[in-house]
Length: 110
Length: 113
Image 1 (cartoon, chains in turn cyan, yellow):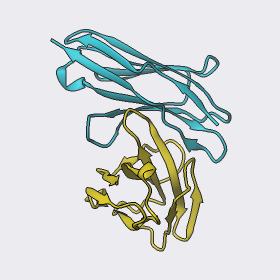
Image 2: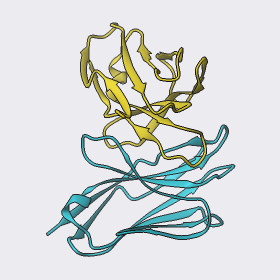
Image 3: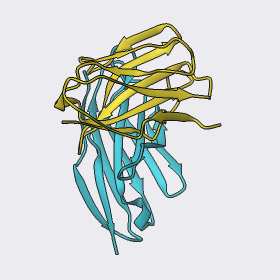
Image 4: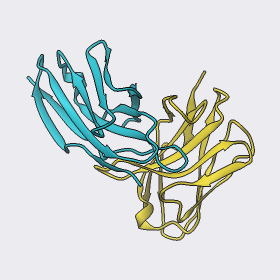
């Protein structure tokens, strides 16, 4: 199985920067995804990391350290529309399956 | 392209009833998945398929069945619905199993009372 740990809730101010951490334990690790999910909607793809380091994509960046079983999602210049749940999902385990964490509910305030 | 289409969007079932959640994709993806998401929880994999005629169990398959007779369609069958199956169900697809992101349908909200 896979153990995934991420904070349940976070609150940040519009225009600020927020970092959402995720730690995981999985055998046969083959990359890690971050998804964004607005309330009442389906998840949408944000990023994928398979090598150590930082991947930058506009206001969103994602970091991976395979040796530490650690990833984070960095959101810059926060906007109200970034209020959503952010799901960490490592790929691996038997059969190379994708397993989702419970998600971090981010609330962006004025 | 419509992507991944799920029907119905909402359904209320009585305990013991049966129903089929429909999922179809027009992207010619080989891999298809069914997840359920309980309030405040992550997505749990119910069943998945790597191609027509091939299906396999995920984390929480009990109480469900699937079939994959065509590349496009991957219906999920609930037999003898139970309150524990009240959830939001998402169908998803990818071209392959590795680093391709999942394409999700809009979900089916099911309540069993």
